[in-house]
Length: 66
Image 1 (cartoon, helix red, strand yellow):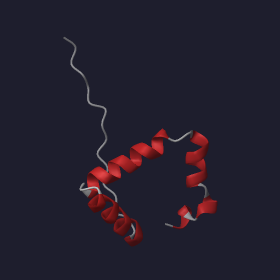
Image 2 (cartoon, rainbow, N blue to C red; image 1 turned 60 degrees about the vertical axis):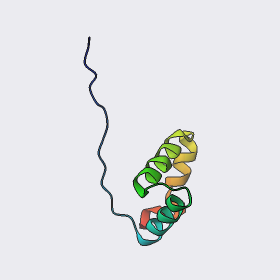
Image 3 (cartoon, rainbow, N blue to C red; image 1 turned 90 degrees about the vertical axis):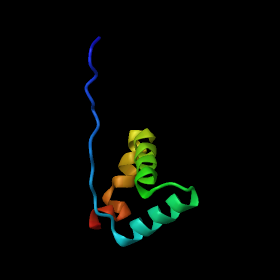
């Protein structure tokens, strides 16, 4: 039997204060940890069409200042 190679990535980030507060609130509302909530958010982002991802990440949204 062929052994599967893990293709996961460990990610450590420091969130700005507002994002951290919102993530904590969202996680506690659904009874999840911040880590699991962040995983759901990241998965949802990558399930968006590429043009929507680009809109969210565009400099017009102010995300370049974070």
